[in-house]
Image (cartoon, rainbow, N blue to C red):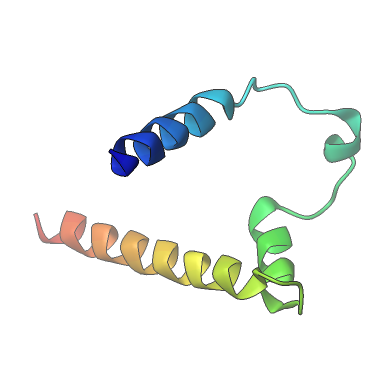
Length: 73
């Protein structure tokens, strides 16, 4: 029964986290891209920062595999 609660909680979090497409004025003044901010965060000593760095490596690896498979076909 617990996996159902975990699934429902995950779906609720995903549903509530939608992007409205509107950016606050403070973000528009930022000169760093999202990837650059994530890279800086991944190199910091903040708890959980290593998870950000690992997620970026996994995303890069997946993108490289998708790109390689697209060039084969």
